[in-house]
Length: 409
Image 1: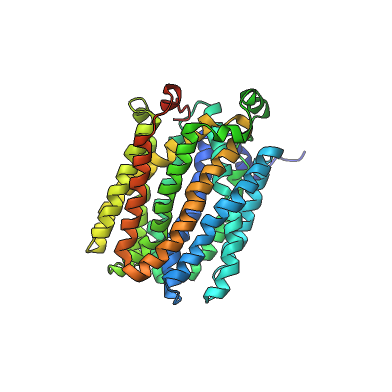
Image 2: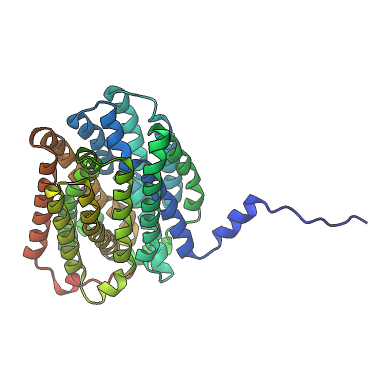
């Protein structure tokens, strides 16, 4: 008689088991690993470029590829995903392309050498946010979950990894951050496969009588939302490009830069966790005005900073504002867009806020940085956010649209 032996625990069984865990856990794991990638390199990328000897205009040109591809590539990939219902497949392809792009970014040491590689990398990176947001928002609504509580794990991850990376890259050198981010991009493919696909029947029912994407874009709330997101996204784009360089300019080191981005991300978490509570007391329009005001105050403070440590206090305002801004914006888009246009609608707003706005503003920001100095960059940011606030204050929406029920909160 053969004795039955205990089979060793296989990794495939673990992965299969995790796949059937709660949708909230699956969405949280995806955001956790995706933002770990960003935290490993993004806070230090412009400093790395500056240490290579690039000037403000060259850094601005390279940084412009990210918003440019959010404007060009993200809507194309997102529309393909919506038309064919292949959101997860497109997401996997983009994650694999991002892994390859990050892996080879450490090779060139000149502006011309970095130019084509950052372009290719930006193409694959740009669709990841709108497609994954669309999948996780739908999953949250389907299971009556709080999207903000799922998204908060991205902020936790970004903050923690940024803080650790500031210490690690000081010891090992910036080149290692590209390798670490590349490996994480490959690993995040696994949780991307656990995300639930769009319910095609649900989309069909919700799309009846809702018209085309063009008619959807005529919605006054969506139009104002796109324009305001364009302005705020332009300010945030300049900030992401020059914040770490500014801290370095004020005398801060790599650990302080890591701490700055960690505090920024941790500050987003309360706004995301308590988004449902806030929405019971304020409508979407008022929340966005409040969020923009926090960001405005932060940028004014940046321009007045005399010591790098001041930035650690001021970034709390920006973090709280961004948390409210992001969750509310994603929720409003999902409420407005028909089922078969949701990923595309997300990509349109991403194209405005993380594409066209930062593309134009980052190029201008590089010139402002070189000509008038680093502090002037953040005065420009404050002006852009102020215009967005005025836009919302000056616009009256129909009662039904002024107080939308953002069900994902």
